[in-house]
Image (cartoon, rainbow, N blue to C red):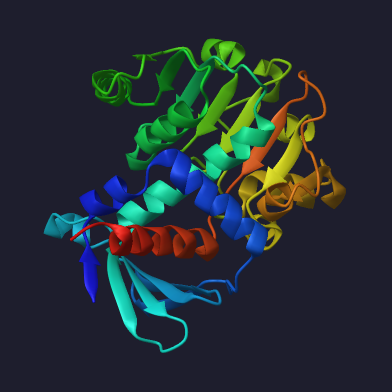
Length: 312
């Protein structure tokens, strides 16, 4: 069984290649049951995210251990196991965190390929956590007309640090202190936060803006307000996940600000060219992602296949 480190995973998954892999995976479909959550006692938890296709079986094992802060370790730990579908033979063990970061950003890049207005020049990253840099990298690599990246965070020092990191990678990034002004000038607004209160307001959005929301993954989390949701043409990664877990949609649905029909597509339908969400350059579009095990499976399979094809 091959073990892949975080660095090996990032190296094996160039953005355009991974985006195409996800497009094929969403178009083909896979079995991806709702994740299993198990309480381990106290605040500790174990999450299991299985998925399988005709070729491979995969499962992501995630532990949430708040006590790790005192141990000097990350609260969330993740490992991915890939197996051969026919025999059940273990093929690979992969760093789950790297796989998650990479596939999450690539899914947003895939959605933006259809939802963002052609010729997008300015990307705004809202948030400075671990995922934020990967969102910037994925969009920058797959939106050929982007000219600059703005970075906003509650922690000004962290926003400056992230912009500096991206600039050293030849991404024209600058920090900004005024979120409203940044939203008004951005073509793509990518939010990767754990906020429970809306950060981006619909009143700030300009015609043609694309909202990319990846931070919220629970019903009590919000990154945009109801006005932003109501004025947007919406696509989700999966109906099942977004309609049960995404606070940015669950809350306005519950309160009657939008109806179920306001959510126009999921990624599989875009990948199969079954629908088109953006109808005009002035449409405001919104992609809401909560993550799906299909993405992990597709990314892990690609890492494995590229390793097998590489000369030894």
